[in-house]
Length: 471
Image 1: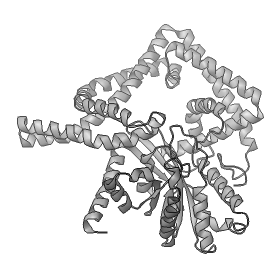
Image 2: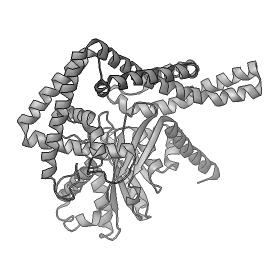
Image 3: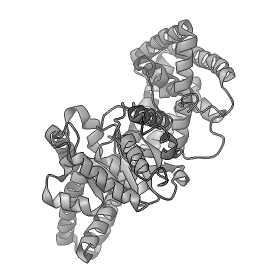
Image 4: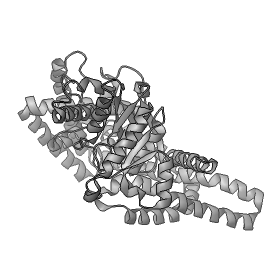
């Protein structure tokens, strides 16, 4: 690689890190020490389109090459950059059915990387998607791993490391991401019968990968459980954080939330399977509770403040004072950054596909925002330089990003203020409704706690919620 090409690649990698740092509030990395040395195949879920590759590439403790759709290589300048960044084109059936022979070339390039003790990343679901549920895995990752290891007669030492990507809100600016590394799988353990029962070995390895990846995510296997899981998490997660036996060591908030939510999913499955009548009664009570909240125009997060008139009033006053103090700064940020944000949102909606919009918005906003925000910032700074002169224009330029962040968080916090005001109105105008909502919520929490006690008695020592028995 020439010096110029090396500089361009390093610049592109630095730009990706900058964009991720600006767009996401925090990227949590959990159990990165599980990544071994030697040849490694990383397999990750794919809920965030190109953003997934950005996050994985910056989170891995070692350099790796990616297998990516050949569609990205249609533009020659982009294809040149991707190849120099170590991206290997992979033609999928939906890309071009007539060109499936190119898969052999892609696997050959991956084999050369693994032969050198390198790492390769693949997204075995094959497609990106909007919801958080893990999709059926394609067999390509297992085929690649088993074929490579069989060529070395089991002596290559190839290991597969599953990766779980969890977004707190992937389409929202300043949200969070968890990169969860799973336990490595030794491919050689699947080789003894590979020559005679090739298809069964590939299927078995693919199934094990799916189980390991599900254990790294909040995977709800049944659609009918989604509402129950969401409600139990909303009602009970704060209490579960205070007195749980799942998370026994300090860890970042999103990591802890994912682990505890996996426990909630496991417990809801247990209740749905072992106590169906009780589960149906809980859901009926939940629907009545949510209907009352809608009638009162309250969110569940506001209900806890109903327990204390003094607390609700103090909260409203405190948020109101903060809102008044920060309003001038937030207004400056809003006036400067609202125009490019509106243009960015409009264009990002046009360049993303409707079925996958939520998954594609993050990288679309990052890449388009680089141009829009950069252009507006340069324009603001130029005008300030003409009108105010260079020293003042420099201070103005330093304050612009700060006022923009204040404006962004101000819009979020003002929603909490309105929630507190609505709560205060309920306290003053509908004391009977207040008592009714609190009784219903208390009854739901009591039922959750009762089921939790039964569920905990069924757990075996060492059982990890979200994993299949015997994995």
